[in-house]
Length: 331
Image (cartoon, rainbow, N blue to C red):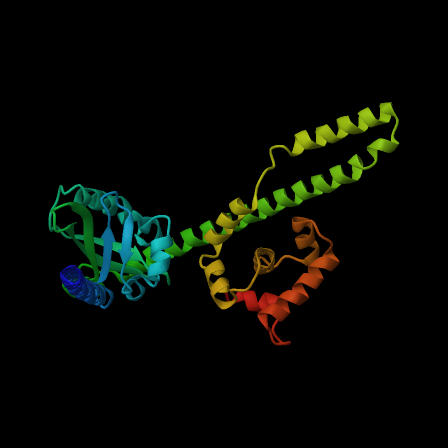
């Protein structure tokens, strides 16, 4: 009897100890959940502060890589944060060419902490090709342990202020600069169009060579030794002639995106169910190539291209009065 009572007492103690541990663990979980909610609320608060700022807010890490861009970029530059973040270089995209080197030098000095709280004035070129005066100010960013994380930059449009202070006295000069930018962009556009055309020509020649080899290789077995060796030598010569004419789809795609920035992003957002082959067809249609030209590039018959175009129209759900050419012209 005494032994049974002792066992019961021991069990009650164990249960009591487990209940205490469980209670302590529950409190700890509740505390962690409370702290996590506070962290999320702080994150949300700071995001709102940055995202809804009138100034264009940027954050560069210690290597100068852009890590954050506020939505205000649209108001100042005409480019969305996504376009800014995905650009090869911020300076190449928006900074006026004559101010570009000074801007990069200023950024380099700020990142190296050589200058502190010093502003810099520069001109940028908006997406609509307007020139605006801006002022940038930077502040070093550290975490709670004092580790240097990079810089936060604030950019504000001071064009009207510059005009009010008389810094922009000659409107004709600004127009001249705008014309220079427009002319430069026109030249660049023409160069890119020529480059894309040359890539397409190379690809077409490459595909033509492949078809030639396929056709002639299948005939080798039916030829005698003398003619077979002659035909092989002829094919090797063809390969050698075309050896320098090499390109791939990715190289072409880079050139195309330089010419038509945002094309793939827009079409994927509007039509996410398109396949890679359909996206390629959209690319060639944007370049206004004929079915015969497209057939030569992707190694199928013109009739197959026409079938692919019909299927693409159905997938895009285009009305009868809208042609594929007209549809892609707006992208």
